[in-house]
Image (tube, one colour):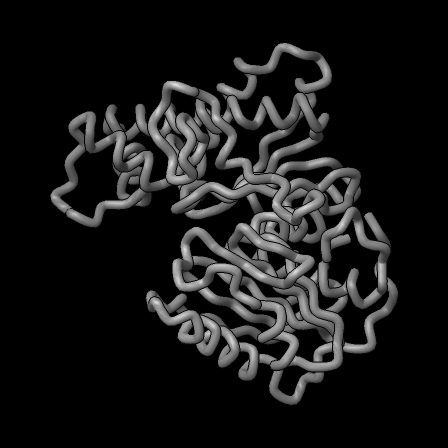
Length: 322
């Protein structure tokens, strides 16, 4: 993993998601020193979302003089242009996020990275991952995202969008995905997808807004449909994981997000299905681990990206992320 030169001060880390906006001041060791967060406004006005985020930035950065800024955002993103078009923030299409951040925190390096890549970097640096290793980080929540860390370095790809794990098609005849394809990992294994399938099989909770947490609770209590839903989702995740491990020669996969909070309800069948799908010797060394940083992974990863920018590490390909 690339060493980081001593920082002249803390850095600002920003994590933009479809449901939550988070900002933190971080030290050179990745420790979050000060933080603020709030809900992502469900508004058609792009500036409503921007103003909410910049309010958090002002709150956290007040009197701190950050030395650099790392911005992690849901995607797709365009790091070269500094724009974002998050699928789950309809108001932002080619939105110049980095320009707004640079105006709020002027005169310091500011870089943009995908939120799943940032989460993978955070876990690799200060979480469950092994520093210097080769890993896939996965976030299993309302959607499913992924990020690659190869040889200890984040790999965002030429456009900044490498690692879209949720949109690997593992069953061409499977359910339609929001991306337009069929049989994507996200269309089967995301939280809403698990719940949707379980309802179709007769699962009932008496609650119209039942989510994956309730499904996990029922699975823990032995409900056969809930258990089958998690097994089906885990089998799909495993197929995607083994495909990526075969291509990238991975050491480990770190899985986080709300659905991963189900613990062994998810990880038990997931590890079993990974073993069943694995036939090549070099893939058998793969370890599947729960994330250690929880909701902070994206902020910690954004902080490392900021520190790398501050150290002027040469950029990989044409992106803004080393």
